[in-house]
Amino acid sequence: MKKCAVVVLACFPLACTPHAEPGKPASQPAAASSSPKAVSASPAASPPAMVTVPEGQKVVVVRAAPRENIGMLESGLLVVDFGAAGSWKNLTSAIEKRAKQGDLPSLIVILQLTMIAELKARGELDAFFDFWARAHSTGARAVWVLPLGAKSDQQVVALIKKAGFTAHASADDGACFVEVHKPDGSITIGMPGPQL
Image (tube, rainbow, N blue to C red; front, side):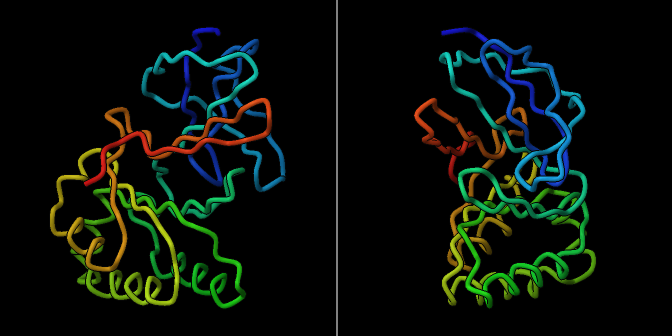
């Protein structure tokens, strides 16, 4: 086993990157690609977390992104990040379209504090969660992540639960979701923050 820095990189379409591969410098950004699973990246501002990564494994860490986006992870989960103050109606329309086509996998939904403030300021918080309650009633499966300070908004935590979903905080460094890719091709997934 090697001790590697897990460097979380900001990238598009998701704020995620594989970044602790033994034998490769952990600070190297991913190569650019047009594939929806591959991403280009630039280093994030936060210091890297140190973890022990067994030989042949890689770690993918998902963080909240500044802009709204939807992207598929190699594990088959769809990450829906509403960004700092994104257009929730555009993203929920895309989710609704996928659901109607029978192509809606399990979701990781990231809702940042600034987006919560925007929803409240626009008077759209109830409409936002009405969509999610309807989505749950039609079979949508999602785990919500409230990164950093967003976890303290108890009204939003209650609305997530009322809509039928579970919510987690992010890790203290803002990590929202983690995938560990093993040499046998299996992928272990996890929530780095506690359940709310």
